Image 1 (cartoon, rainbow, N blue to C red):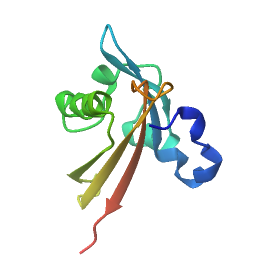
Image 2 (cartoon, rainbow, N blue to C red):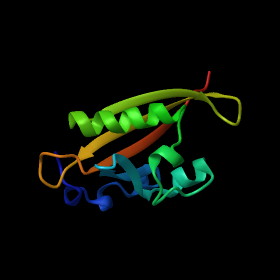
Image 3 (spheres, rainbow, N blue to C red):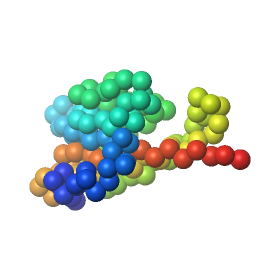
Image 4 (cartoon, helix red, strand yellow):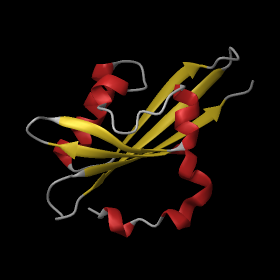
Length: 123
């Protein structure tokens, strides 16, 4: 697994508004938003930085959000979670969320890098 230091934000500047970085805590089991891109703050209508994902999630349900983070933490594996939704304009959209595990020691996931891509469908 890569470390946080292996990721250089300068390599993907145009995508930064859609990036989140989440700290993984154990005992108690929690996921905390460390960084939330401006595009995600705009979509959510508030900035959840510093808050627990269980309280400030954005998605179909709390259980869905937590299950994605738990999978990445427990399996040390990436996850692509596609979510169809109807936008505020009444059009069908596809939201794809990519979760990538990060580890300082190569064993335990201590952060999760998240990229959110919204694909607008036009028919």
